[in-house]
Image (cartoon, rainbow, N blue to C red):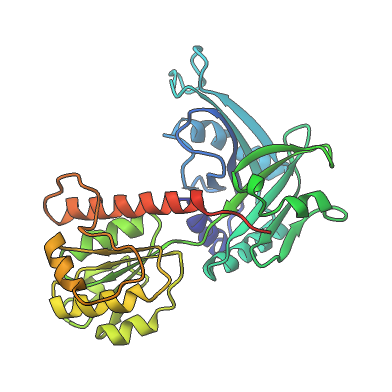
Length: 346
């Protein structure tokens, strides 16, 4: 997942100066794609990754100079080159990676905190950066799905960019040349954190919650049994909901950014949960258990959405950890397909 959420949390709480590095263009193959960012703090702390480690070493050397001058810079890493790079080994990745580094000054901090506000409230935000001839960022703006524009753009914001925003062409991250303003611009969409709702707090739910949080999901765990539904077992969950299905499902405002797993191991509770959840706007609903058990769960029930059962990719998983990996892999695959297929709109 994108590290932007961790980066924004860090920017909001730290008093240290920092530099934001973003991949703006990839030619060929690379470890990460356009829009991926990493934050370098002045004390040497790094939030996020752009590569397996090779690019970060090179970029970190430039952090003091960028903080001192306050000027953004761009770098090009030719990973196709047969010549050893400065870190002493041929990377062999086969691509060319363009990275822009920007000092996070006070005004930029305010705008990034506004970005965080929208993402926390489940609103997608498009970023547009105007790139100068020397590779620096001359202007930037954020544009939300509900058409709120904020940022630092000198002069009137170009109509051509307003026309482009949320069009089909603008949904792919990367660089493009806008003839109307005779300039290169970088475009990227930031998505809210996807949310995983786990109904059932048995021991097999614990690795799912842990792995999901580690990969960028906001996790909610729900169960009616206090001995199981305890913060001690789910330290990384955003929230723990103790209650019966009709109580806890009603507490959650479900969105198309939500993924749910039913795994209470109680037939009647699972049946109730499936019926309640199938009426919500979920991107994904999975049921732990065999096909025969799921058929019994759904007998006589009208379900308005696709059910993933048995939940998880078929990898021959055995044991809680492997099953958790197979489930999360299927959810991530669904998330990627859903974002790719989702059309932009003005």
